[in-house]
Length: 441
Image 1: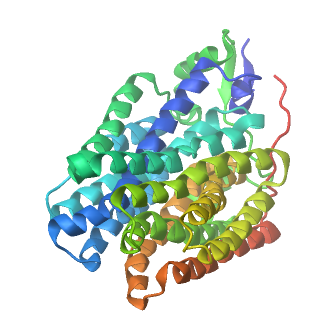
Image 2: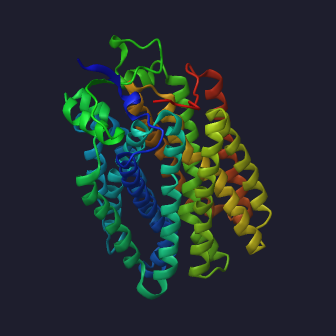
Image 3: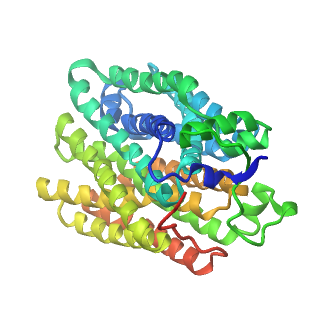
């Protein structure tokens, strides 16, 4: 007689199995490709301005159109994944890439690229969160999102090494080839969501995956994870209805936080190379100094993830945003010293990028299984509008001649708003977000 086993029990292992590591690594590589693609346009922007003989305003559509595509892709990603599965949304999105010879062509290709990348990231985060043991979930999802700033850093290193000798097109060619290779490998190795398989009557395939995870055959009937919210009923499990109904206040606060955070992030990653060039830095120098910012985010994401496993998740990320705002103000006073500037850009990146990279963990843990896909995807999608605004805002603030110091002072304000939004979410959430400290199989 078959026993009934919920999905979380099925994946709660003391040590991650090879199957779980493969899923994690493939999703990590997808987001790494996202980071490389996100970052390279900012790094090659000075070369585009010189090569095409255009102004910063002419380049604004190129900077922002991929972000528009990402927002649209992320908003519909959760709904699409419920129809065809998370695996195929991730794979399909990773195939989309391109390059061009003028601004019009680049705008078209960047939009299509954005659609794919916007759909890939939230689905990768959700898939990893579903396959990770409860006591490791926050840590592993945070570790997953180290791939984004790491990818941007790789984009900077690629740019520094290739721009002078091979031109900006070679940077895009290499950056575009990476997601295609990952997509091909994922067709054969990436597994579908267990939630999706059970929903679509894929019990046999789901049990085979569980067998690979636990290393033994289990004569069981898998069922979805029990709801994280006791008030949910079978009649009230519409994903969109839950996100904009029962969870609307904490959802709105996460949307606002993500919006403001990505605004600042994309102002810096899109326009800091140009700002540093105008301050007298060489292409190698401004590429590497700019790359320090997201690289700090890798360290910050790991450190914040560790604190999240020990302390309240919401308070940890809120505090990280507040410290980041303080670091931005300090950085504004240090723009005349290249070494101190690089150090505090690294620290500011650790705070801001680390906090931003932790938001998917917060959302994946906060939302119940019934609406997790939509909740995580919508936070990404609506937050991406902050990235879109940031790309335009970056060009706009150049007109005020604030200088590097003034720009860092101004950008501290939206970071404080992010901290306030998460503080209010913590006050008014209908569910407490906690991390299980132990899990026994």
